[in-house]
Amino acid sequence: MDIFSVLTMIGGLALFLYGMDVLGDGLKKASGGKLEIILEKLTANKLMAILLGAGVTAIIQSSSATTVMVVGFVNSGIMKLGQAVGVILGANVGTTVTAWLLSLTGVEGSSLFLQLLKPSSFSPILAFAGVIMMSMCKREKHKVAATIMIGFAVLMFGMETMSSTVKPLAENPDFIDILLMFSNPVLGMLIGLVLTAIIQSSSASVGILQALCVSGAVSYSTAIPIIMGQNVGDCVAAMISSASAGRQAKRAAFIGLYYKVIKVAAFMVIFYTLNAVFQFEFLNRTASAIGVAVIHTTFNVVAVVAMYPFTWVLEKLAYLTIPESSEETPSVIDANKEIQILDARFLSTPRVALEQCKNAALDMANYARDGLFLAMELFHKFDPKKADKVIELEDLVDHYEDELSTYLVKISSKHLTEKDSQELTILLHCIGDFERISDHAVNIMESAREMYDKDLYFSKKAVEELRVFSEAVRDIINASIQVFHEEDLELANIVEPMEELIDYLNSEIKKRHVKRLRKGKCTIEMGFILSDISTNYERVSDHCSNIALCLLQLNEENFGTHGFQEHLTNKNSAAFLDEVKKLQEKYKLP
Image (cartoon, rainbow, N blue to C red; front, side, top):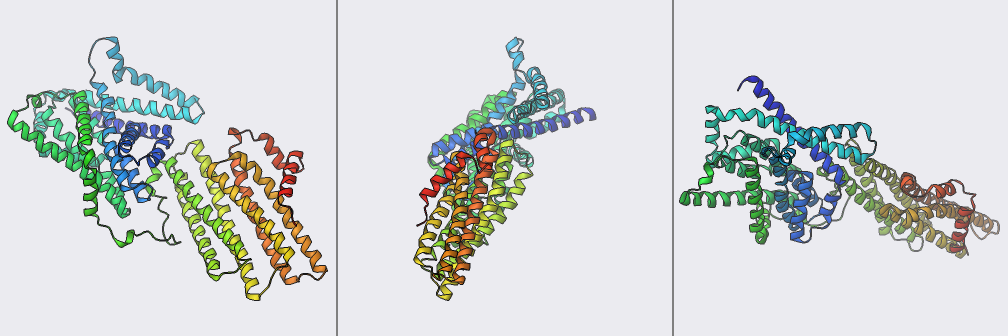
């Protein structure tokens, strides 16, 4: 084997690994993160968790990616440790699908059907079609499909290149001697472990083994220990990922490690003990790419079935390794703690990361609303503890804005689909509005504190007017949060007329106060306080309107909002005025 053959083999390996990476990215984008989100929500049943883990891994082509994501879910408190066990077991089965795809390189036969199954026959067609689609199609889903086709073609071309390069090595004595060394179970297992740990993909390392099998120099006595080592090496990515995570996430990573070590150790002891007694003749036979796929799948399926009744053992071992501590006791969220659901592990799957951002933003919105409603209550009966709580909630909302903004900037650097970019834009707009609402809650609380400190009271008439005004503000903020949470575009259409109503109430209440002031029924000092309150109410409604309008504008293509957009921008339109009139009847000042 000369230097040019070595370079060709290295080039084939590079194309193989790159193709696998491109294919995996394309499949992740095609799934749109939906599979991972389903994985997060439907893992309460252990069997379902195993099936979902296998399905997700089969599609995204990486058990390491699935396990790392599970570590992130556990670290964020989204998934319980018991749920994670099933997903990890399933991921080990799902990762075997890649080996079956790669085994197509070993297809032999002269019939037209078998010839068409060979990657050398269909990969060029896929690559050509993918390039044409990539250059001509503008829609995101077509570009994703083209990425998958090109990735698969590059993967198979790299596999073919490696296979054709190593094929002549079957007659090289030095190469055969090296492979014979790996027939030693311990040494073979170690080389499989190290190779997988380096490239952090058992699918890729199995593919490399399958390429070597094409040479005809690899026997099953060599292939089996290497496959076992590959199974253990696959957990390195999750272990590294859990290093900076919480104790529960570390336990999830250890569950993956213990499962792989136990199943490989059990197999090695049982298999080689039986081999010592019965001398399995097939071990001396030449291994094939399909044979490697069969062993890889059978081993992992049998291991899952055997371990299924004993998953509690894995949890027990994880807790023995990472004992429970007082730090894990649930505590009140404060502004100095990181928001756990914004886990850096999700950044590799932007759709999932955005879903966690939306969950965090919804929490932020609810904290802002709680602070506002608490501040509004203080006019009826001032409580210093409640006033302090308003400030605490405002600090928490500020913290959420900082954390979310930083995390969203990180997501924006990833390759996003058009839909993901749209959602990121909505989140960036809305979290600023939620933060400003909490600021206004503090302003309202300060007005209530001033009245309490100075022993001031509104007239009965003013109290009734503020009650109606407060009810309208409560309704608009509830509506805007519902619009944000559910992306309810029908409800979003109602928010702008509500904002116009609140502008009217703000103006009308100030006019009525001036009338009372002229009649001597109110004071200038109370007028300043009332003006501050009504101005803050009006500005809260402005931010609610911003949230609804942002959603309407960005979804205009997917929703028939053209007519209503015109009515929104034209506040003199009959439809708009009619809606405002209805609201004025509902929130009629006494």
